[in-house]
Length: 363
Image 1 (cartoon, rainbow, N blue to C red):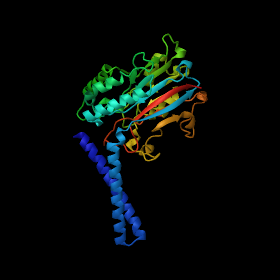
Image 2 (cartoon, rainbow, N blue to C red):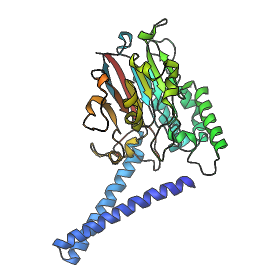
Image 3 (cartoon, one colour):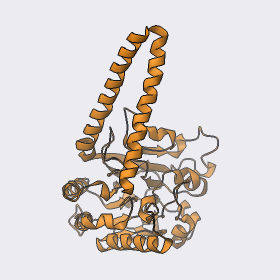
Image 4 (cartoon, rainbow, N blue to C red):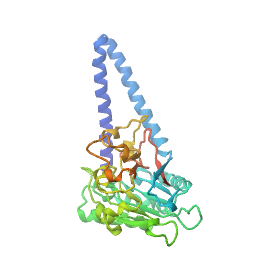
């Protein structure tokens, strides 16, 4: 019922927006046309608008949201260890498993797993929002989640490791009637489900990744995962200091090539750039609002970084977010993945489910 109410609000908002646009168009026409003509032209324009929205929604539901795209980008830095040149990080985000019916979801997730395997990953990372409301929504897809952890390395030596963090929807914060103890139990259940599937949870923690057994610290990279750190009304559970403590604290990023998994991209400007030399941050969360027309999306109104790759050296036009002088010449990147599933209507207009592949390159 709660979800139906949410969908109803969204539909009502869209209809209201179209009607407001219609009123504006009508009174604009009245400046130039007689009343009867203005009414006729206005009705035609209104019908065309509803037709376009209807067709776009149908295409977005039945076609676009099932078309997986792979975007591969090069992350070039002098700080990449020699042994990691060519290392492939495959990122997925925002599965929102409840946006799929069981049969449809199982078929789609099989396609997703095959698509991930085809990227020849060295590591797979998931940047949060496995579900929308509660852990129970993921239960029908246990096997599909485990299949992702069963992807074989491209050299045939074992399986590709999967690392995961929690997103804002993974804390059961949006379930009415849940007190804090029930929320905590729900989160524990969701974490257990992922760990039983073979995913490694990073809850304000980090691991060191090696290419060869016996690699020294200078030949490794740090993979750091924080719990959700978001702007209001999204809750904050993450602690970057705690996550980096095993490395020796925030300053450790000065000497290590490091990759951060953080669900909300606003964390990059908020804390990562001002405080650290984390080389690459991977985020999701925005979905590009599940609507993108050309290069435009409503996400632009809310997020400075909402899709694709960002280089901190190109963000210096904002005087409130200066690029730290000591980092000049050593780039810091953010990649925002636009996700797999849907929140609200099961529609993706112009923004299909995304797999992103970050290829590390030694400059």
